[in-house]
Amino acid sequence: MQKDKNNPVFNATWTYADAPESTNHIQIKKRYHLYINGAFTEPVQKSYFDTTNPATQEILAEVGNATNQDVDKAVQSAKKAFKSWSKLSGKERGKYIFRIARLLQERAREFAVIESLDGGKPIRESRDIDIPLAANHFFYYAGWADKLEYAFPNRKPKPIGVAAQIIPWNFPLLMAAWKIAPALATGNTVVLKPAETTPLTALKLAEIIHESGLPKGVVNIITGAGETGAALVNHPDVNKIAFTGSTNVGKYIQKATAGSSKKLTLELGGKGANIIFEDAAIDQAVEGIVNAIFFNQGHVCCAGSRLFVQESVAAIVIEKLKQRMQTLIIGNPLDKNTDIGAINSKKQLKTIKNYIKIGLEEGGEIYQPTCNLPKNGNWCAPTLFLNVSQSHRIVQEEIFGPVLAIQTFRTIDEVIEKANNTPYGLSAGVWTQKGSKIFQLTQKLNAGVVWANTFNKFDPSSPFGGYKESGMGREGGLHGLKAYIKFEE
Ligand code: NAP
Ligand code: MG
Image (cartoon, rainbow, N blue to C red; front, side):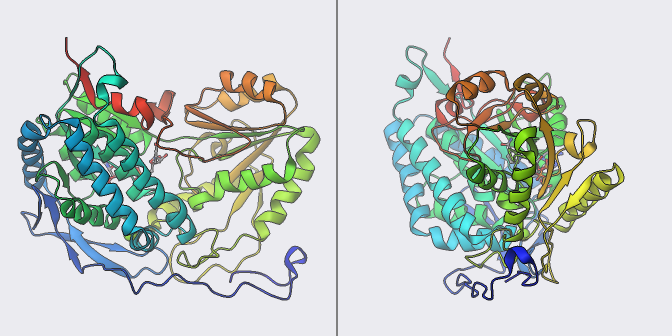
């Protein structure tokens, strides 16, 4: 394991034995076609691209590159399927969604391993968070399918039509579940495009969907790069677009759909504030800071990437944080002891390294624990910056990596002003023993989700989404249904 025995913080004479998850039970095909109209279909231009394991650079499989003609085929199949799917009773729709949820649960271990192989996240996270939460989303929305009249009393909710869904690489299966489950529950049909670097679990999901007997064309899954996403966004027969990704692409999509009748929800970037008060339980708060920024290598839209510590406890919090960082295990994502896995792509690693350089050039004081990063693959040590202020780029811009910017504060008003001083508004965290302080703050923080004495907690029944440049619309919970329905006049 990646531990430096010379470090005084970790001078134990033992280390954890390797505990790699087995890969014997998983099946990855050499080549994946597009899932269109209930069949795995060769792309029209017969072109494919590789998806690799970011921890080793090994090629895992090649997947179809969907071009305009494939996008059109997928949208037409969804349009055709909408005619009957939208008329099916909620009870019958629910049965299919429950079946998908159960199949996902049955094959959870296989999905977890493939998620970690394709995206680089620690197996502990894909096994305990991504996959069970994805199944839970299907279970949760399956339950709503026959209760829409109760969700929206006296309003006669109707499905919208063909939903184009575009997702990023940080929670590949979970984001697919967030998108597909509410769309199906409300009677819409779907064309989903996963991210270029992490298509495998979405394609595995296509296999499960196929196995569930879902009528053909109701869910289509097509792989490709940004151009495939753009072709989907611009297709005239798409009625609804659900996009999760960067603010830049979100802005492009908003422009591309302006003046059309396409309904749009955007889940975009963030720069979450994590606020530690002097009366907080310090050890728990330190764990919370680690979870907020180093979970999934910091590839988390709602990561607590800006830490605000009350001045009176700053020294102790920072010292304890540094000690804790020294014990984080970085390395093989498939090892059950691993805390921090591989950076998802070379491109993202370059972006993160560039931000670290910017932080240093702007005068930030860096701390990284001593650790031996693996030789192959994309790796970044957990990093924190002290001596930064609101105007620093690493404080203002989303890095999407394991890099934390730390500032101090004295009063509640000061920290509220600092926390809200960003173009984003996705998440925030507050650590204090005082309930009154929690209520005072949570009402004034411009963030879609505010956690108190915890961070990065998700539940299918809880809505999630942003303010300002973090997007519009909500996913999850009752609110998540709204994005997929219209009301009869
Ligand atoms: P991204 O570059 O915007 O890509 C997101 C998806 O859009 C990918 O499938 C991508 O395909 C596709 N895409 C790229 N250009 C497109 C275009 N012109 N038209 C249509 N689709 C296009 O974002 P990312 O780097 O993958 O993901 C990281 C970002 O997602 C971060 O900013 C993060 O904060 C945000 N995020 C937000 C949430 C949330 O709920 N608010 C959740 C997770 C992530 P390729 O992969 O092939 O480029
Ligand atoms: Mg990959």
